[in-house]
Length: 384
Image 1 (cartoon, rainbow, N blue to C red):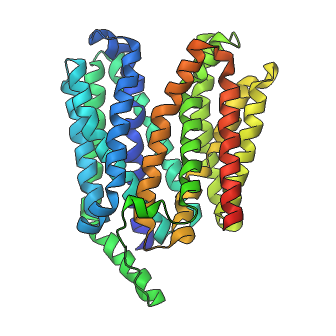
Image 2: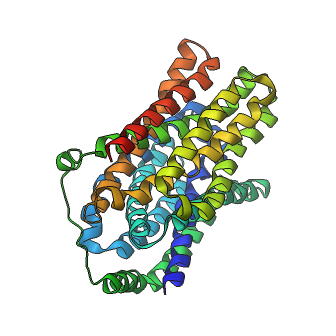
Image 3: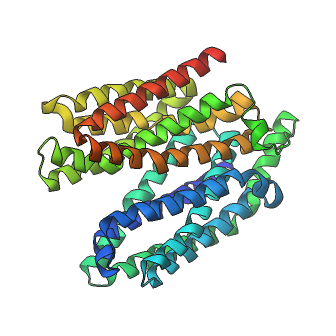
């Protein structure tokens, strides 16, 4: 039963990743057809992230009232409806309208399922599950490419992925009972049923160590999003790399994350979450330094991706152990909100830095954020 549910959760993580790179892969065509600037992509990102923050902060309330399975199924269906809405959009404001429910769906799934896995499965499974998110992110650009190359338009690409989401939602719906059965089996095996306690935000941040964890998570997602979004521009404008090669190495950053999470799954249980976080931070620092060195700067992005791989899963998986299972859903929801706050602001802040000063500050910015993340997690470990 554990294995069957795990397979379903793998599909959920693929579902979570599928839409994430879809807009980006279609945007070069979309913005021309919609007659808007390329920069409008940033507006969509902010709307999606805002929706994600709202649903993440309310995930504990939703999960406690309806259950993990119901929240996940409803969110996948909402994601599918949002993608259909994208496919029918003829103006930019319509995209913004559908971006909000998509963000709400993504945040609800992310917080609910991450907490469930953290409570019921080993650290290795958390790494492999987030690896499957990378699989979903990698698949959708190929789907969009297929639609564009066959002259079906970007609208068809969104529809294709929405159909996949509906199928995945029905698969999860057919296995809803597994979530409760696995939870009941685990509680029976230890003769203890841990009740999920809903606590307010002001009380969450007063728990010792939560602020440091939130800041660490903020720094991680700030680094990951900034590294991914601005990689091509840095390689072209500063390193003089051809645009095609730069785009390829920028994509290798995400491949590095996916591959790194696959490898992390084999060692996470042996070394523990804290070690995996520290290891990832050390590798990120090495990758940031490599960006300063001309002959190996291209490979620095891959190394940073590999370093990023274990940090997100390890922080999430360690939350019940660090702060108590009864509070984990509430805290993970706030962690998701903190993460997406970093996604919203960090790339925009670096964009201003690059505009006002120089794009050459890209590795400096990433190194500074990496150092702040390292200091924050180190202080947290000392407190624990």
